[in-house]
Image 1: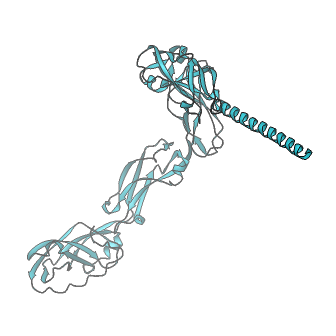
Image 2: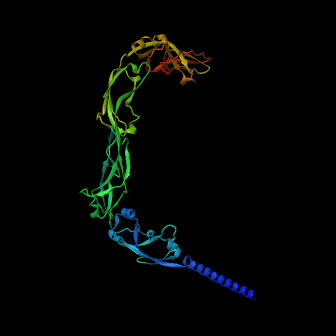
Length: 440
């Protein structure tokens, strides 16, 4: 009996404890649900500053500006679930008013858009109340003025190098804003630091605005510039002496070794970017064809320095006196004739038996040439389908190895007839100093 009663008491206690545990679990679940998804809470966020879109672009393009008195804030009363409000950072809420639709001066009422931090959607928050649902802005005429740029340069370039003139991009800085504030600005100033520079330095730098008394303008909130930074370039150049030269082009019988010439001045000193000048060793005035040159002559040239360089010498013209040390001419009658490009199945007879050929070269080389050393070669390329007598072009070949040039153009008379062609006579071996075409 006592055992049954004891068992019953223990069961009763267990039932009571179980009931209490279930009740606590239910209460905790309900409380948790109320504090997260199921329950909403209101919150007031005060004095959110207004941002303005289109102020420096659209308005400025229309000659308009937002007047300083337009600065405002908005206070919002919002409602959202507790979980959302717990994640919301009020300092990251942005309110933006778009000014791009404003086309005239005066007071304008502009609606705004509220932007919440990343991860919080606009649909998850309800705006219960706002201190203002539109923004009142004052729009006036834009005043603009361009000012110069100055640079405080610190440091030096390396020894043997020269610092060029500072360059700015943009070259002038346009300032926009209220006229009385814009007119206070005298110039924009940047600071550039270099140390033993051996090449051009280019940096994009912040700037500050100064008045006519060289005092820094501290309050620039109402001033707007067309550039946030200024690119400053300091050309770093090197001085280099470059000799002047002429590019002589040789021909048979006319060699550079046989020339006497002088160029005045012999060189000029230039300044330019070190990278640009490192592979430049001279200035070429012109090409000079020795084939067409004979008598002593004076030539004048314009000195053109490499692009981007400065001629420090200041001399812009050069003079060249040139002549051959030994140059002779002679006329020798050629007596050897042959043909090339003979048409198949035809016979060709050269009617010309003697042809005066004008030679030039050193006196010794010209005297060494005899009539038997000269071969005149008729070219039949243009008459391969013809029959009869024709005058055809010819080239002259010198066969004794002398460095002699042939002057002028030559022709010979030939007769072409039907029938088996005679084998071409072998051409004399061409000397290495004689051009392939044999012409002057």
